Length: 370
Image (cartoon, rainbow, N blue to C red; front, side, top):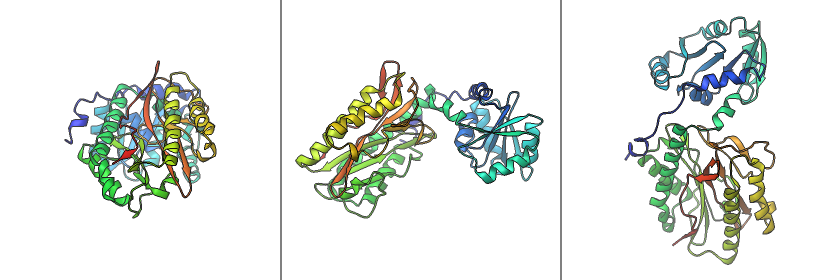
């Protein structure tokens, strides 16, 4: 089945992205941008290697990498259609980069991915230029997905749905958290994923009160809450979903907590629409849980963007200034965590549309595994 999920995917619309970035350079006070974040390099050029530096000016775009990728980079850039000149270097990266910048006065660096040591090196490389710290120029472009990106995220979500459906009842056999997580990861690969979107979270019993618990040797037991937070990767694009289940029939208190979180999650999804302030989606979830007495146990933001990174813009929390727009892909994932009792999180990934949103994750929210 490895070719099934990706067989009919539309092409990515990579070619126009560098021109869209150029339109943002003036507003950032830059004559050029040095792109060092490898995810951003991939987004702009199609190149997936582990070493690459992209310099974008008004007139040109130069992608610099080393001899390990001599064939790969040409194949990927050509396939993407990105208007990029490829330079293969050994030890002369500085010279190639300096030549690409030339006499440009203001050179932007990606402030969120350049260390202090790197900044000092770049000052030596571009000694005639002023370095400008830029704020997420490429990440803002990445927030709105094209049809090819949406199709890959949706394919990843479909694989995750199918994988959990295939092994969900294994929880009745009392596997360890780590064993169940490994089975889920393996099933996603069997169904066509290139990997897991992040380290799969399986948190059972009291461990479910830990929002980002790492799977352990604890065995799942009857009566446990089990938080299952996971995703798949298809051609670099990720999915994200959380379901919380109970092994057997839930107690009255478990059902109350579950209903509070599931209701909050439904309220958050219902609030998502083109043009809404992202913090209002967070507010919809948080108010619902607060009204039921657990507001202080909802200890994280409501959601985040998903794409080439599992966490990317826009953010859905109390502090965000983002406005959701059609084409954004975000999660809605409220939770309640009660020490010594357990926790619940329910999460869907949705596409923002002009009339609301369209969920990409479809696994049923029935919490009972029996």
